[in-house]
Structure formats: structure tokens, C-alpha cells
Image (cartoon, rainbow, N blue to C red; front, side, top):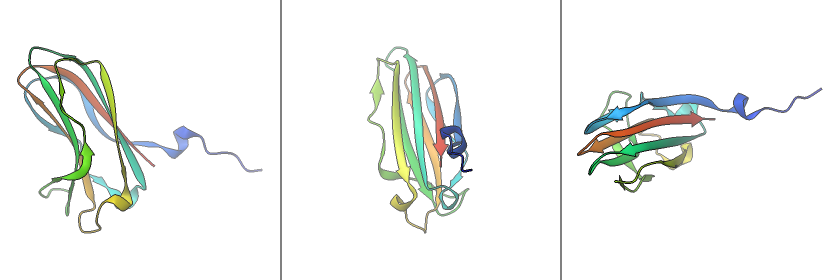
Length: 124
């Protein structure tokens, strides 16, 4: 007898930025090896944005896990300002990056004021 694969069995949490009230700065997920993942989705959950705070998120790639990371074209969100309480999803297929840069990180940048935000990256 064949059993269907459930969604929970086909997805894994492969990257996180813990939800918190972040002041101005940049936070990264751990490096993700795309040669072990077919696809991923990054779910950015934005809560309250105080004052003139802003939120930016991008998927970035590098040749090595501890190398220099650059933003992947079309894999970033438009800057979110002043009004929070949003969820944004950024997806990436392994075929969208070159084999010369197989490592990916999520890059969360907040500016000006505190922002409640967190990121979960799921991979299959």
C-alpha cells in the first residue's frame, strides 16, 4: 500500500530569523546549500513598525558558505515602511541560481526605528 506524502513530510524549516523587535541593522539566516534543496520559500512576517522604521528582505547567494553574498535578481521585497502587519513570501527554485554560487542566505535589514519581524524559510 502506498501512502501519500503530507505537506509536513515534504517541507523542512531550513532557515530562520527569530521574531523579535529589531532596531536598525542587518540579520542573516544561516547558509543554505541549494544543491540539497529543489525549492525554498521565505516567509517574512512583519509586525509593528515604529516611527519611520523600514523593513527590507532579500535572498542572497555566494560561492562559499562564509563568502561574500550578493542579492539574487528579483528575489527581494519592496521596502515596507510605516505600516506593518504584513506577510510577504519570496520563492526560489534551485535552477534560478548558478552552480558557481550554490549557497543562499536570507538578509533582513531594518532601518531608522524598531520593527517587530521574523523570517521562516521552508525548503523541499
